Image 1 (cartoon, rainbow over the protein chains, first blue to last red):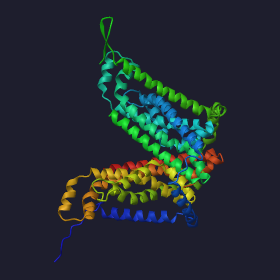
Image 2 (image 1 turned 120 degrees about the horizontal axis):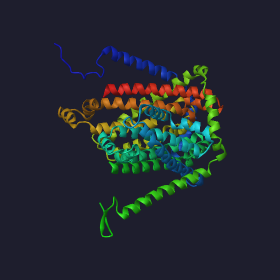
Image 3 (image 1 turned 135 degrees about the vertical axis):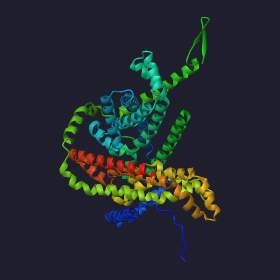
Image 4 (image 1 turned 135 degrees about the horizontal axis):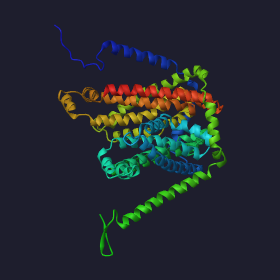
Length: 263
Length: 271
């Protein structure tokens, strides 16, 4: 006498595909883990430093490099404001160009291509190029963040413009409105809340990124942090990390609050 | 809508005088802040380099333009390392983030006071530090190499995956949970048979999405010594071998596009 037992249905119904995939994953894991080259002696030595750093997190030192930290944060904040503004001002025309319901096909393709390029590379890679062109310092950082902001803001704004109701546009064109009048009275009132929200979001992202791109010489708090690590000044590094976390949380909260009010 | 009486006639205005004044003050504050920031940056810029930028840019482009195709041969190994950093880092993050998400979700967290707050704190602090900063820290602790990269990716991903997953758990339907509990299931069985099947599609989608992001991030971790193709990038930038740099850019672009395609296909399949 056989007893029928219920089993949960498997996630992948076809048994050949299921076993094939499992085998492929196992083989990959075997190869990947096998190709890791880890210097365990170095790791063991490092654990001591790790413990020292963990201890430093509880005794952060804000004062002995206080001037450097303040300078780094002011630079990061200045870079964030200027780059977001420049990015916003340049993103608006690009977004209008990248909206299929407002622009002719050639303009649309150029603007979409620009957005795609700006979005596919990490900020830090763009920063390397701008540092090579403009020299070390915050200006290269501003250029990097502005370039990345254009793609980000323009993409979201263009999608919003494409999704808008065509009737107000038709109405304004029917009264004889020119292209700029259509933009001002038809498009802007509809997308303005979204534009403000996206800019707030990008301000938040730009601050986070400004803490990174200093590693390749583009100014900001990242450079200060990198120096602190290079000098093995754990307590200063811990102070900078804690400040970054605090500012990121604060800006995330403020930008979320403003975006929530707009909705 | 405010109406102003001037010369005995009602005049419609869009805003009250007070609102107009406040708006102008707001704009003034923004512009003043920008001017100050710009002055700050300008003081720290060597303008001679900047006036030279167009020439430098053209020079850079001319050095980059035939990419060094022969260099591709030495790039396969770093590329393989990059893939491993992203994939193993994501797997490690999944192993940690899944139980963490169950602890952080309001409907599955065990009735131990303070546990949920700790889980949420771990998620928030992991999320607010970029993986490059984690890598900087880990290279100092563990020494340069792929291992530091894997752990950096994992530490950053735990918060991301944990947050999205616990939101998915909180959104899951309570009725299957009641039904399973009514059959006399233990808490563990309840989670396995009532919650897990509901969040499985979200789980697959989130993991693949994060894997896609991690591929992008793994390409640059080498800049601070954490292994992968970024190491080659930094080495080529340091010796000003711009033909190699552009070759690496092309490879990174191809990898990112491929992983984006895979991620989009998988997410379309599970949802």
